[in-house]
Structures are given as structure tokens and as C-alpha cells.
Image (cartoon, rainbow, N blue to C red; front, top):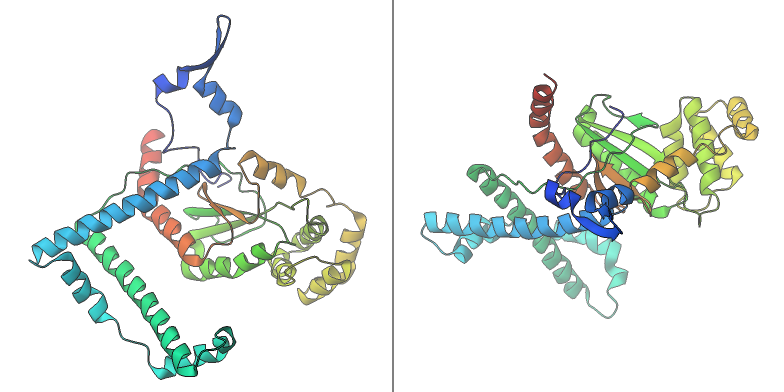
Length: 337
């Protein structure tokens, strides 16, 4: 699978809109379709933001209708239903759970007694449990009611070329554009590891270079990562480069190479040769083409996520893509006949 997905579902134009002139030059016209072709994927982030707003509001509307319908079925009010199914099922945190949290955050509460801090922590933990239970209950209602969302997300075709891990034929491909000097990119490492652990070969993760011009050591680090890749140790080097969380010296690169188990003679020769000095450029060009302007940026089957978002943000999209995979394969099979 060399392309993450084909372009663009939700916001595609009708045939009439595509040929509608947006400008005329004498008798010649520039159509909306021609303009969009020239723009390419540069609006994908804007379209993704629009989709996310629409999807959030749509999910709220669905939740309201599901709760109202279930409350009516059970002859109770919506508030009574939520109390029974959510609030009454929450177990309040006990001292054994709160004390370890307190030990780590006590200095963030100047001027408060320990009892006040413990009460605040307990309230926060209860709110988290209510939110988690509400999400689970809505998931159960959606499954029982057969909810189907027809709002299609914007997608862009992204070349998935680069070091990868996960199943080669995985139904979900995540293409990451990242910068080894970027501290936020380092925060994403743990999330991607959690994705690997949770989904296994169902998800393929591909790394692509996108060194920011403000990060002076990012290109050198990318060069070192390419040398590590040549020697079969890309991901071991990848994790160590991101562990620095900032600028990287050559001393860091050589130290991390040793920690990653690289043959130091071969690694030193590779890095000294300069053979991968500009190896980051094709990936950065691809990133620019598909609308990347900051790091980290991800494309999950062509669906854009910007920033070091948490596991839940990724898993929501991954789950949707996995659920749609059988239907997509069936559509492809029919189309290929």
C-alpha cells in the first residue's frame, strides 16, 4: 500500500459546481474545478477543521436524540435516565486512590489545606469517571440503535514511503510528518507506541521527515536517522532522538547510535559521508503538497490530525476506518470487475 487513500470525499463538488466560472478573461473562463486543482491539498487543514466542527455537533445531536428516545421508552425523563445510567453507577474515588495523586500535585495548590486538595482531586476524578461512563453509555445506545454516520471526512492522497512498522497490508495507514528537534513530536512517540500495542498489524505507521526551518539540528538528526535505517535500526534510533526533546548535538547522535546497538564504524562512516544530507527533502516536499505546515502532522488513511493529540483522538478515527474497511474492500472489488 503506497498511498494512504484516495482524495477527497465529503467536500467534493457537484459536476455543476465544478464547471461554474469563478473568473473570466474575455471569452475564456477559469472554473471552480480548475481553481481547486491548482489549490491542491493546501486547504485540507481548513476542511478538516470544518469537518471536525460538523462532526462534533452531529454527535451531540445524535446523543440527544438517543437519550430522549431511550427515556421515552422507559417512561422517565432524560435527566432521570442519565442519573440512573451514569451518575448512580459511578464509584467515588477512595483515599487509597487519591493519596498517590496528591503526592505528585500538592505543590500546585498553594494556600490550601490537604483536606481541600484531596476534595478537589476527588471531584476531578469523579468528573472523569462520569465523562467516561457517559461516553460508554452513548456507545451502547448507538450500537443498539444502529446509528450510521454518512458525513464523510476530507481526505488527501499521501505517499506512504519511508520507514514503517505494522502490517504491510494493514487496513489503516498512519503517515507521520515529524521533526526530531520538535518536543511536541517527542510527546507523540508514546501515543504511537500505544496504538501499536492496541491495534497490532491492523495499523501501519510510516515516518516522514519534516524538519522545520527554525530547528537548526533537525536536518542533521534526520541524516543520522537515515543512516540508522540503512543499518536496520531506524526505530531504535528514532525513539532515542526524540528522547532529547530539543536540539541535538553530534555527540548526542553518536551516543544514541551506540545505545541503539548500531555498528559504530559503519554509522560514523555513513554520517561522515554526507550521503543522506538532503534525504529529508522529498518527504518535506510531500508534506508541503498535502498541506503540512507544522509538526507533528498525521494522516490516518488520508484524514489529517495536527499536533500531538492523545490516544483517544487517534483511536476514534482508527476505529471508524477499521469499521469501514470491509465495505471499502467490497466497493473496490466491485469496481475492479
